[in-house]
Structure formats: C-alpha cells, structure tokens
Image 1 (spheres, rainbow, N blue to C red):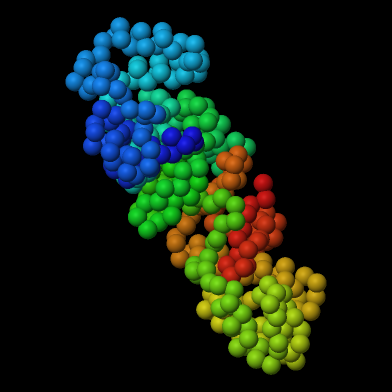
Image 2: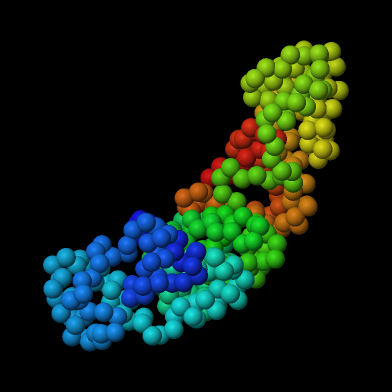
Length: 356
C-alpha cells in the first residue's frame, strides 16, 4: 500500500469519513493538523477556480488531454472503472451485504476502502450474491492456492484478494487473524459468528496460520516459569537457559525425577496437563524434550478445543497458499507428531504450524 493510501486509510478510520473533501477548508485544515502536510502539493492561487465554480465534461476532457503523456494505461483503466461506478450505489449495497455478515464497522470500512480504490465493488457484490460461490464449493477441505481460488470464484483481481487476506482488523476485544475478512467478504455463505472465527452453512471453523496457539491458558513470562522451577527444584541450581533445557537438567539431578516433574507440570499448567507414561519413561533419554513438548501440546490443544466447542480448524500458510481443514476429532498426540512443527515455549504455550 502506497504512503498516500495508508494516510487516506488512517483518515477514513479516524474521522468516519471517506476521502477528505479538497474543497472543504475544514477537511483540509483537519487533514494538515493530523498528518503535518497538505493533501495538495501546493495551494491553489486566487486566480484558480474556487469551490463555487462548475466544471463541465469538456473541462475534464481538456484536463486529461493536457496530461495524457503522464497517464499510463493502468491509470486509465482504473479511472475508467471509477467513472463507470459513479452514481450506481455500489458502496451502499456492499456495506449492507457486509453488515448482514456481521462484520465490525472498522472491518467494513477497510473492505469498502480497498474495494473502492480498486474499483471492485461490483465484482464483490456479485460474488456475495452468488449462491454457488460457497466455502464448500470454492475452498473445500484442502488446496494449494487459496488466494487464487478466491480470485477466480469472485472475479476480483488476485492482488486485491491478497490485500484482503492480510487484513487483521479486530472486532471488539477479539483478535482477527489473516484470512478471516477475505473469506467473509468474497464468499456467499460465510459470516462472522458470535464465537470463533468463521461461520459457513456447513458449520463453524477456527482459522489458524503458522505459529498458532492452541491453549486455554494465557501466555506468561519466562521469569514466572523459572520462578516455579526454582520453587519445585529448590535444591537444584537453575541457570539462565531456555526453561525446557533447565527443566531437563534439573530432573536429571534429583533422586525421584517422576515426582518432581509431575509436580512442576501440574503447578505450571494448573492441572490442564497430565503426562503420559511414555513421557515419564523418556526422562534421561535423548527424546525427552521432544516427548514432553508433544505431550504438553496435545493435552493443551484437547482442553482448548473442548472448552471452545470447536468442530473444525483450518490451517493456512502465512502466504495464503496451501491450506487444510481438519476435524478436531482427528487432532491428537500422533497428529501433532506427524503433521505439525512445534515451536515456541518461550513461555508456557507452544506455537504449532502445520507441515504443508
């Protein structure tokens, strides 16, 4: 997004207006006070037209003729689309359709801004009214290029779909991640449910990109984890390394490592994690950390999915290319072992990424 586009977007969000009116002194003074520069590069002189003069079609033709050497074909195409949309009420219709999908006001403003700037309001309206343009028929359970598929089904240029894909404007206190807004803005049957991320006619879906957190617990600082380590392993010196490494070193220095490990995990995870026997038996072995991470990740995910009542999770690459939708019934310890990369643990929560 160009600098001027970012400024105009910020203006729209802060003032609840569309583009600033260059003929309004109030708008121009407010714009300059907000951003420290004038929208026009230089002030109009007193000999130029003022806001009370009328412009004719011939004036516009003459202006274009005078600047035809500086206008490239892409700009002409955008200008033509803009003019053909004037007076057709596309913005109002699109706003109403997005409201019916229960998008937040800030989200709607962003979508309208991008659609208006790219002259894709009509295409977006047609896509949202097409009852064959559904999540099931277009997206399905898996694919290799989500952005391209959405572009094809909606007749919206790929670069515009990508811009909608990366939007992360929140709604109330809920964080909105990549993919949510575009899926609700270009498909017929999608909507924003009261809980979770995406509603479709086939059910509710939670959306996750890379390094996702599947845990019912809030994140905490490393220092708080180390404090628990020191309290449980009170006779062992705890260093400054990653807490999992310090934990491994500590359990290898006590006479009854199983008791200490269980006490530490229970206190750290507030009873949400009960370790499997296979994890206990891996103490002192090379695979101890791997098994511990798998055990913690799967147990936290199970509690999180049950707590939120999630039926399906859609994992999407950060680029918006590959994706897959999984039933939560099929997500377990072995699923994480085979299909996920487990990272994070800078605090108590793992960050998981699907292996596409």
